[in-house]
Image (cartoon, rainbow, N blue to C red; front, side, top):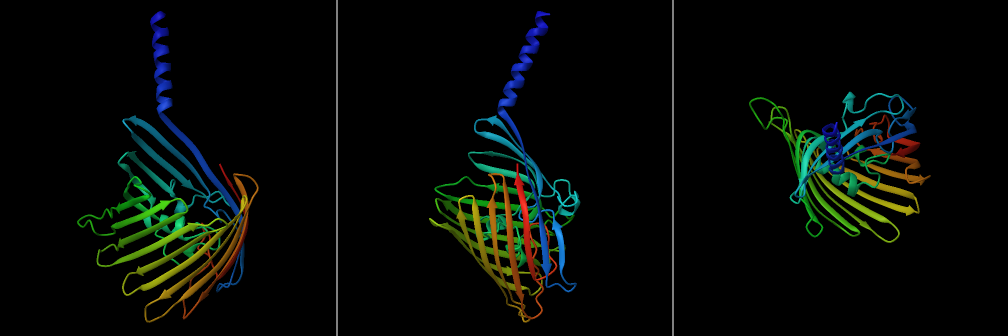
Length: 330
């Protein structure tokens, strides 16, 4: 009996130590809003979007202390459509992100389905709409959002400077270059200033051609507002060639924010299919976790260009869109 009590106490102590060294958190966003789209070939469309300002999601984030400053990390993030309960990202269980890795004084290494360095530069620095609402930069600009089979290394910050390197395996037998993705970013972020230079390259399935996107993005927080700017050079499959310019502003009013942006797409090919987008949005904070939002964006397409106004989870049907909804984070 005495031996059993001692064994049970030892197990409880070990369990307490393990719990103290390992943490798992559950988080998420539930977003739903009214979406009114117009200017499309099939006329006006009104519907309920299941992720307008932010894609609705349920995530699990974990970290285990391995000692000596080394930690194991994982993230499982499921995307879903709150309007009808279906899975997002084409029905993938953890389609938003899914990775496992190690972190320490050397930085962090992660493996799995992850955001590209290019996308993070666009979302976090250049785009005041943070890839959501009708004003998202992805309506007109390349986003290169996620990469499968990606090995990612992020350096620690040195005086505000850092680097982010990514390699996505194409996993095609006989040629490692087929469908391969290469990404990288270098940046500086300290105090009110942030700047990042990012590059993304994707080979096609035969490795005979590739798309290349390079973005220089900068953001500065002034006393009354935050301004952002970005310039992208795009080389696509075949002879595709374009330049993108984005100018954004975010003005806080206590828990509320006013957003605005202008994007110019300059097509350098003979077709000259230019476009520009104007957008405005507003978040009204009901609490730290819940806000109401409203947004409007309009695209002007030239010479047969066919860009559409979407939102965080919808590619859109026309060249104008209005959003009105609610978002809750937990």
